[in-house]
Amino acid sequence: MGPSDRESTIAHTDIPVPGGTLRVGEWHPDAEGIPWLLVHGVTASHLAWAWLARETTARLIAPDLRGRGRSTAMSTS
Image: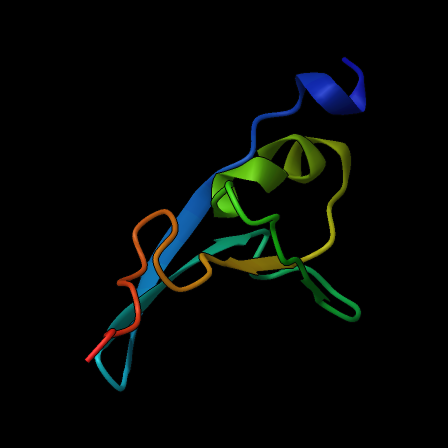
């Protein structure tokens, strides 16, 4: 079994912020060492990093940017 064949489980948390919530995905929450904060591109979501979660055992924390994935957009008013 190679690294990319490994199962990776993701935990989701919705964090309250002014005007809504930020959805955060976290892989390997009990991993030792420094966690990695991952920021996706403009048209993606935290799930863009699922491939990396299969390749490493590091703790990965990936928020959805405002208005992307399951995070609420910023108010335009």
